[in-house]
Length: 312
Image 1 (cartoon, one colour):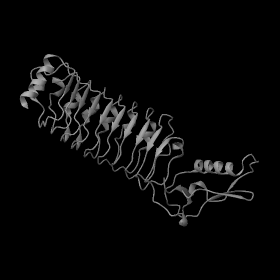
Image 2 (cartoon, rainbow, N blue to C red; image 1 turned 45 degrees about the vertical axis):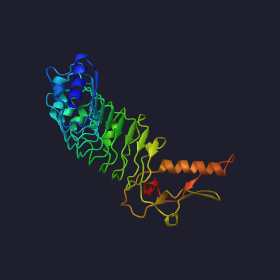
Image 3 (cartoon, rainbow, N blue to C red; image 1 turned 180 degrees about the vertical axis):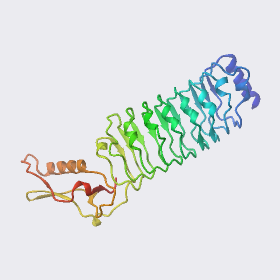
Image 4 (tube, helix red, strand yellow; image 1 turned 90 degrees about the vertical axis):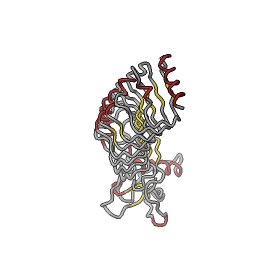
């Protein structure tokens, strides 16, 4: 196995390969052959998935200076070392399914980085230097132990896809609403109780997934007309326990769906549902009053400030 590995690396060096595949090699250490002499100066993509690596060499950037993509999925790496910051041409870094506990601040020096995947690790925080990644388009930090997102994440102005599923987040920072290029946000399986009221205001944000946040009771109005995933949100309620709200027009009374109800206490955290109420009213009245004159309608229930969405 060792001789075959050395032969593979030697051929790549002699023939100036740009791609090198070392997946499924049961490697416990970074191959010394890769770091021998001048290294592999022409190599651009290195695949080392599903091995047993625990660390990366300090002289990695010196020996592989033109590396653009580095795939280390499914190893046993615990720490992203400072040396990673010297791979100045790196655009894609995949460290998913490792044992990562620490990401060093030097990761912020990867100014060309576009795709960063750190899913399924043991991270409790990310350094604020992540905000220095101005070219970053994809960030996947799902299935970790994060209690909060990086402080300067809103400075990643090119970020389009943010996946933070299955962490321990209690809130989504309002400054994420400032991300001008964000198209997809997934925060399913966290502990969210509310969302920023500005979330969805950007026309670029089209997909939002908040499934399985059991404490989440409502959605910002800006998220209407977006693609929303919210199954498993809110506590299930029985229709018999709900006092239905209604609109009246003359002798016609239109009941809102059971999802809209009165909250008995002012202390509950709620989100406005005026737009949902008006859409429901319009749809229902249109069904009853096809072609007829529409008289003035009055909301006979509680004001919107005391309405909430109890299930998604």
